[in-house]
Image (cartoon, rainbow, N blue to C red; front, side, top):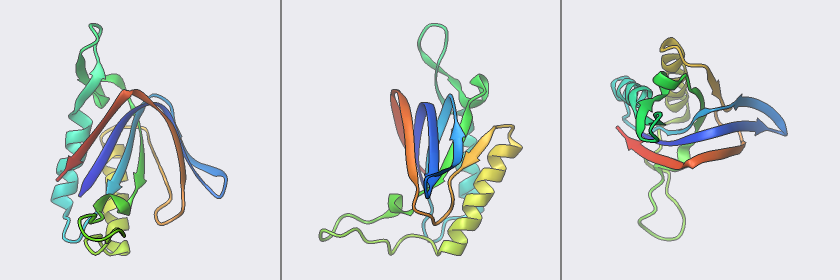
Length: 145
């Protein structure tokens, strides 16, 4: 399981020119699910993101978590994160989870964040999406479980 986490001033995702998710200040999280990924890995990843100290305190030091600052979350499923790029010129998606399994973990991810008290918005699993955002910093991290 891989996540790209971006601290944003705002972010939105659209499908067929219709906005399906939008946040202000918070985190844009792209989530890629691989074959064999488990609920335990997802729980670890979500807990880590919630506690990850990537927001600035009053001294400008990254010392506050998404929970500390009341950040909103926009979570977007992105199977291309788990692509193998090591051979040839075309990405291989052989390691990507079956769409039904990936969607179940993605939905569970949304539920875990909501249960943790976050305002959560999402993309549309399996759809072609347009994502726009203003990266704050820029601050971007890759987390694997």
